[in-house]
Length: 316
Image (cartoon, rainbow, N blue to C red; front, side, top):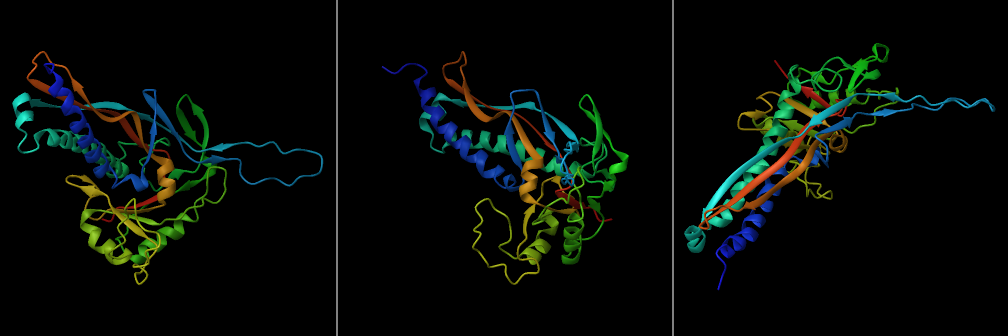
């Protein structure tokens, strides 16, 4: 004879699988430019570029001691999120409309959508001084300090002698504007004064600018995780080596005219989703044997550690 709650256990495999698929499908849109990491602490320190600079000439006797020049550190704080769904015994038994699978899908969509919109908001807030990074300035700024002088606890103090760099312009999207930003990025230097090696190969646009991005990158230029590197269908386009991602949806992300160019490999190092616990779905026993309860849960935070790998544009 089946136990009272055996039907609940049977639901778990369906809800869990549906949850995983729905979660992955949504978030994959942004993972080409977002790194992921896990942390067992409430906070995570994301470090920007740093190094020793070029070597000094050797006089045959005296060694030249290295002095590391640092950028800035961003502290990312994770937070908990959850959503709960209930399925009745009769509903699961009949299941004419796939309600149990939909419960998993909907919870998965809720979890992935939560991470997704928080990522869009991270980019939307790039222009907002109320959301500073490790150097005390918003992600998009015309006066980022190149290096830090020293730290006071977790706060880093800028080195005024290192100079500044700008990763914010106010130009409308065009081929010329993109190539200008690519050239500007190749003039950036790291905190130790070395050339900042980058390849600004990805265009980020608002939904309203997608049509223009498709003209620039080609109709097959939309960046997807499984893009075929042998595909040369964009060869006739103005910037055939550039792909694009739409950075907006609903009320979140870039506004109508905003766009950016970035190095997608460096973005994954410098812009991260930090998981205290990755999104998951779990069942929860209730006093009522006729109702199964499933809880989607995640503990995460997002942040950026540097601004050199991306240049934003916010036209008037």
